[in-house]
Amino acid sequence: MDYINAFWVGGLICALTQILMEKTKLMPGRIMVLLVCTGAVLGAVGIYEPFQKYAGAGASVPLLGFGNVLWKGVKEAVIEEGLLGIFKGGLTAGSAGTCAALVFGYFSSLVFDSKMKK
Image (cartoon, rainbow, N blue to C red; front, top):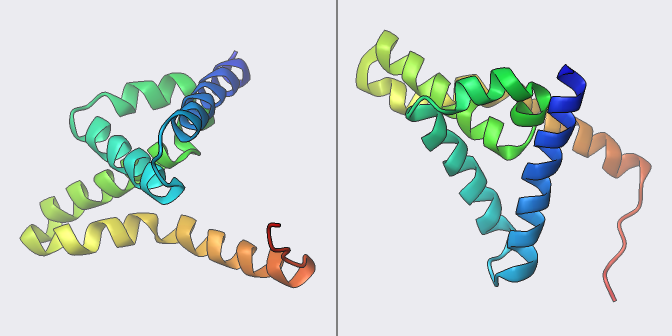
């Protein structure tokens, strides 16, 4: 049942994001920022944690999950280090995922050639 919940929740998030991209004039970068900020806000009000327990990877892998990771990192760093944790916590919490994305993106660029749109 975990796989089914992850599949339909992740698919729903992606479908809603695709509808947002198709029906509005928002640029993809702004939509990504909107998703990260939404994940952080949902984490701050306590909604995202039970949602993530229910959906598993379907909720933690999309950009909403990245926003929640940033929020949790900032919250823990503020508790441990005070006000300086606002600047340090999100970077510490999200560094592994960001590093993996950069490394795999670099390796992909070595293997594949980019093509310009016509």
